[in-house]
Amino acid sequence: MQSMGFIVFGIILTIILVKIIYDGIKGVSEWSENNSTPKTSVGVRIIDIDRRKSRMIRNRHLNVTPQYTVTFLFSDNDKKQFDISAWDYKWIAIDDEGIITMQGTRFISFKKNDISK
Image (tube, rainbow, N blue to C red; front, side, top):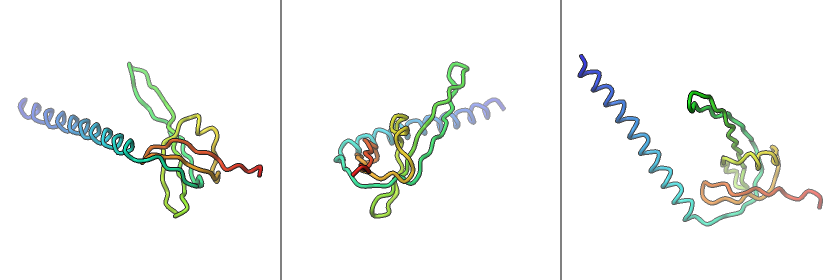
C-alpha cells in the first residue's frame, strides 16, 4: 500500500515539474520573439479596462497585488489585451483614443489623442 502512495506522489511531482519547465520555456520563447519583433505604433480605442487582485501566500502572510489589463480595438476591428502598469492605468479610460506602441505581445505605451485641437 505504501508503494502506491509513492507512485501517486511521484506522478504528481512529475506533473508539477513538467508544468514549471513548460511555463519557463514558453516565457523565454515569448520574450525572445517579442525582442525580435520591431516596435509598432498604431491608432486604437480602449474598449475595456480590468483590475484584478492577485493573491499569493508568502511566509504565512497573504499578499494581494492588483493586476491591470486593458483591451484595445484596432482599426481593423482586431482586439488585443495587454497587461499594463498601475501608472498607465491611472491615466486611461474606456473610449480613450490614441496611439499604442507595442512590440509583439509586449505593451510599451499609450498616448492619448490631443483633444484640445
